[in-house]
Image (tube, rainbow, N blue to C red; front, side):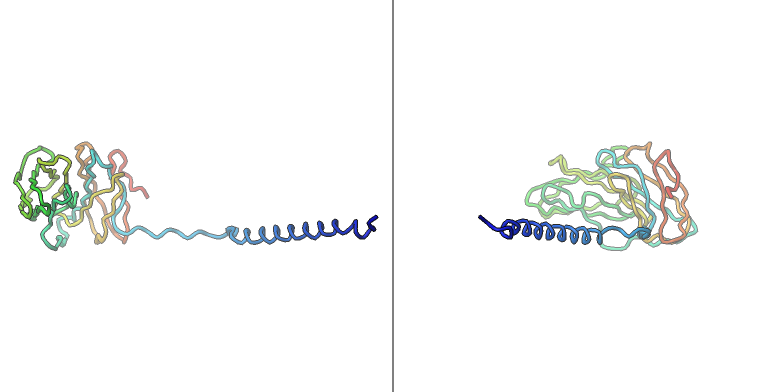
Length: 229
């Protein structure tokens, strides 16, 4: 027969094991609580968005809205300076697919492929052709854009190839995102007319905007002309 010490030994071992489990669980709870937010802590405000920004109408038929800021007539504005804008044909696509140019500026259309294309440029509002020319491999064609507004660019040989050009006399113009969000950086303080161009004429609006600081939020969605502040 086993003595009483032998009978009590397993119980003591089980007690030691249970104590170890409780100690481990206690340490785990202590560690997890260290990641909890401190009660009463104040979250930092997000950095302000610089430039004129806000919402415009969303894209229509794949063509985004264009937001333009026109300085007051008495203000001076510096136009865009750089190389001749270019739209290339490569990989059965126009690159870039969206381009903003200054009124009177020349755009070059090139073909970097080994197959032939053509360039067909039409005024979006009236579907009037202003350029229709073949572009052989390595070829180049140019067009001076004298009139403000939107222009569709296609290749009659490959209907899937499309691009869009917007022409403006203002140096402050951007394509909005597909959902309508836009931002125009580096806008000096002053009075501006903010306008929206869209494929849908009913979405085109304009309003007066005063820019006095690093950031200015503007709502350019028809039917809701509040500042969105």
